[in-house]
Amino acid sequence: MIPRSIQQIVTAHQQKEGAGFLVRRPVPTSGLDQVDPFLMLDEVGSVVYAPGKAIGAPDHPHRGFETVSYILSGQKLHEDSTGKTQLISAGDVQWMTAGAGIVHSELPGPAFKAAGGLAHGFQIWVNLPAAEKFAEPGYQYLPASQIPQAQSPDGLIDITVVAGEAFGVAAAIGTHTPIWLQDWRVSPGAKAEIAISPSFNVAAYVFDGSVSFGPDATLVERGQMAIFAAGDSLTVQSTREAGRFLLLAGEPLNEPVSRHGPFVMNTHDELVAAVEDFHAGKMGVIQR
Ligand code: MN
Image (cartoon, rainbow, N blue to C red; front, side, top):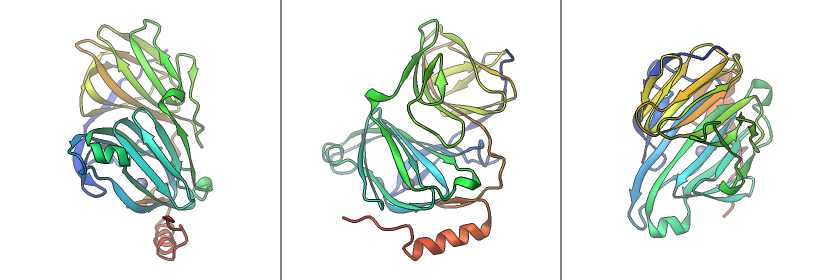
């Protein structure tokens, strides 16, 4: 196998989202618009909220792509214009297809808001190909107990397989295009190599400790995202300490991207239409 080298390391910048919560965002960032088909990666928190103080993102629309919520700590209440309500707790994943258009809210779960505590998680935006940007809106939800878990042959890496496959374990979530999204927890002394399609774009965002990648065992530290060059495998090792990272890999769409706020289309005219359709109520409202 030809292990991928690191082509670029970007450091996440911090900014506020929703009602004002802090996120760390490695993509998009200056000089990196996307890792096709991944449009955005936000690490939400970690932040400790006092009782009654947790905040989220009230009613807002999306069209043309998918939003993935993966919660490590805390609890999120999702409500949407298709009439669905979903409590998303620690370890759970919600893979939402905005498609033709949806309005949703992402607020702290009532019990979590009342008690306060540690909030930490991810939101990832995955693009849809032009032919599927008007797919029917909806979502897949998996509680933590139903997300497949894999382990490296040396037993020193544990992997939550949200999408794709790792060491013979396949995900339970279905995706519109070939995509891997996995949470890798690497113990000291671990070393593994995993085959990944040479046609995929591959990135790894380290959010705890540090992890070394590639034939030169290049160290990537907390808050950094590595973008990998061509190859047909990824080598992962711990050379210094334990580490944890999100693996993002997928077949690039190679289509024009026109994005504005919560809408991601192929052309400017389609963006204008999305804003008009939202204001005309065509993406619905959340009935409460
Ligand atoms: Mn949203």
